[in-house]
Length: 325
Image 1 (tube, rainbow, N blue to C red):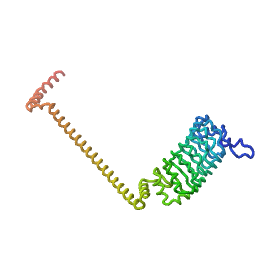
Image 2 (image 1 turned 90 degrees about the horizontal axis):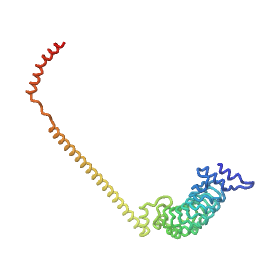
Image 3 (image 1 turned 135 degrees about the horizontal axis):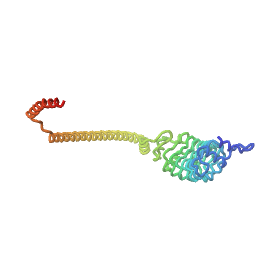
């Protein structure tokens, strides 16, 4: 709150635009748990402040993530000194295009809900992996042609742009992206012009694992590729073969599990038998030891003579005791 007040307090009469001053940046970093020294910060929280321009980021060379959501930006100039920037979140602004001064280190870029009609200069970002440009104004395929140069792009969101054009050209653009795995195209009229849209996209783009509202599972890919090569009958045959293969795989895994359980049980029984044999051997050894060390019992005649002798000595002992008294 204090940082926001500082951003507005220098404005004069009739001025409505807050300024991204060095003092405000330091205060904002301190309030968000960062550091007063600019080079030590790796995250900048600049969202929902009403900024129309980006200024004074020359010292923030180590920043890796910048949040610029919900401002009044019309361009993304001013970030060229953030050479280590990896994530830029600039959705819900008034941006009209991709700036030519963006750092080439950017891997995640969110420019959704802006006035962008062309993804120009997007080819300058060789490390770009995730691009979100949903709810923009990209009406034609010429606006996304630059994506063919983004060889590392894996996740692309172009939902609700009102895009139209030649569906075959759209497929060629996406096929030329070797790492594309997730693609979101809902809300664009062009997909309604492509017959069997989902099958065509899955069969043509071999790297695709998620399309629009659900994942692309292996069964769907097998069927789509079979349909593309041989039509509906080939798709049905591929589906049946896949199910047979899947059932055989389940049976094989079940048999393997039963085999492992039986092997474990046999080993357990063998260990128990071995332990019992060891105990029996130990018991026989103990018996032999007792026999070797057992004391011989006194003969009955000797026991009777010893008892008689004790009785004879008893009166004598009593007489001696009386004499002493």
